[in-house]
Length: 294
Image 1 (tube, helix red, strand yellow):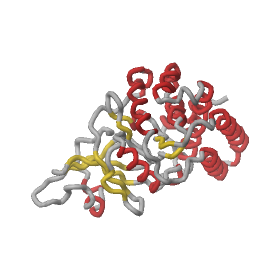
Image 2 (tube, one colour; image 1 turned 30 degrees about the vertical axis):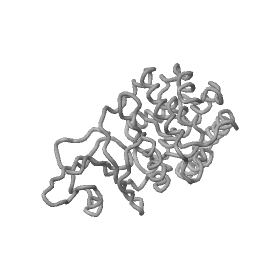
Image 3 (spheres, one colour; image 1 turned 90 degrees about the horizontal axis):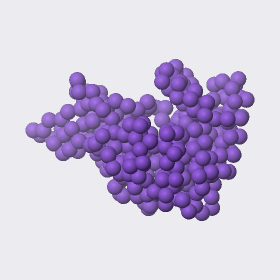
Image 4 (cartoon, helix red, strand yellow; image 1 turned 90 degrees about the vertical axis):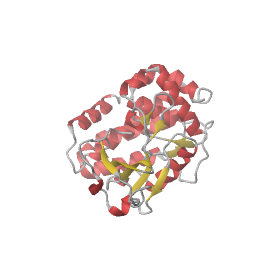
């Protein structure tokens, strides 16, 4: 998973009631070690090593729901993905949605440059094919139009002067949705946030951080990849073939799905900085996403 800070133990940063759910923690005669994991912009994650194994405790940030996370849906879909071997096992999901405990995944975390490599993308397609073939839990289907509308509402409440820009982007979202839809593709389990920091492993990667997982069009996962990593565009045919979508999705549909996710990501970053100054790198990402939109 994400890198950890080796300099300090962080067990005192995790509430005792949370640690009580970590397998092996507090057992007589056993020692535990906790380390804060780097990465993540909303949640706080810790690696906890006990005699029973290595686990991740993720404390959910209060802004997660504002940015579209649904913790009950996440737990259900994460468990479904773990059942087909593409996600770590969930050890405990708090009923009040304050935290989750899962197995720690060992292996190299992907880098942005991996998305320009055909061999890496073939491995990702293997993981996505397993994910998209998983039994679908009974959760509400993903509605990207509603997601965009909700984000737009929050932006306009905070900054009414952006009405013209927001209106233009919403129209682009409607066009992108029309362009990528197909009656031939059934909704499946999608990860919906295939950032390189969420992929672990040299071949078919394990997928972590299921906050935005959904039941939706499988093409959305490929649109997500291209929105994050334009360098993968030259491998669009490989992505469609490797996930079995070449018969139901055209390159043009994939382009529309990519644009849809560029819009979703832009709104996510724009909403995230409401009420809190953005980091320079986050502001640069937001500006680059906007630059990619006509």
